[in-house]
Length: 127
Picture 1: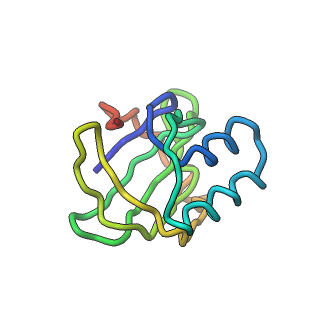
Picture 2 (picture 1 turned 135 degrees about the vertical axis):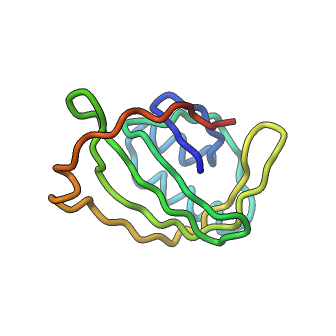
Picture 3 (picture 1 turned 90 degrees about the vertical axis):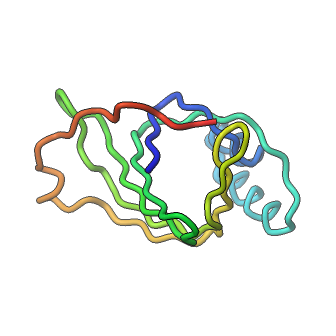
C-alpha cells in the first residue's frame, strides 16, 4: 500500500514531466514513443492535484489506485484506476516499476461520491 499527496516527489520520464509542466499532451505522446524504444531519461516530478492510495500486491503485474480530492473537512473519491505494470521492486531511493501504458479508469459513482469524506493518509511514500 502506498499513499501520495500533492507535492510528493517522484521520478518520471523527462518528456512526461515536460508535458505536465507545459500542459502539452503531444509531448506526453512523445514520452510514450520514447518508452517504447526502451530508452528514456528520468526527471524529478511532483505529484499534483489528487491524493492517491495505491495497492499493488507483491509480484502482481497490476495496481489498483484510488484518487481522492479535497472536500470540506476530508477527501472524496474522484476515480479508480487499474494500471497494468511490471511488479514493483524496492530501490535505494524508493520504489521502481514500469507501467505498460495499458489501463482501465472509472469515475466514482454518485453513491460513492456522496459517502462520508475520509481523513488524509498518515504518510506519503515517495522517492
